[in-house]
Length: 163
Image (cartoon, rainbow, N blue to C red; front, side):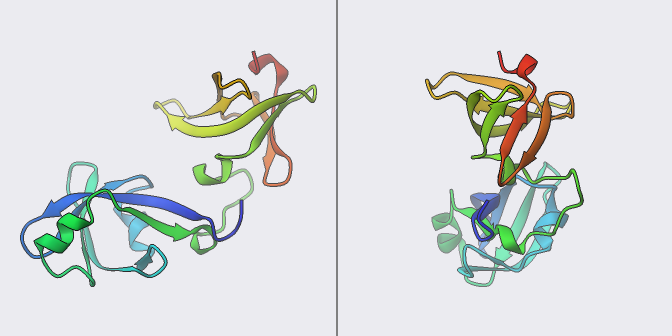
């Protein structure tokens, strides 16, 4: 993945109150992960304050947003940071954004397609692979199914999981 590819951490779901605060839908590890960053969208939005809303989202204030009208205009805005600004990971760890877009090949060398999504239904991450014909299949993100992955080689999937 290019080091400055934008990674979406949250999205504005609407205004909150009359003073310019916004409601956020979080895509990361919660409010604490969002607090690591001050600027979003290439510096267009500067985070002044953020708190947990108690419902799995957050309430935030941006320095550039002075009132409810300005907050309402942000509805649907994705909050992004460059991938290079995110914390380095230990061996075997990954950000979902690092996997999306990687080519997938089987352990026998057959091209399978491209990773288009990473989902988690409670039992661990699951990769969604789109074949060249548009059909999709899912593979658990574990050592038995995904033998290796990297920005250079893509995903190598055990052939038994590629059907």
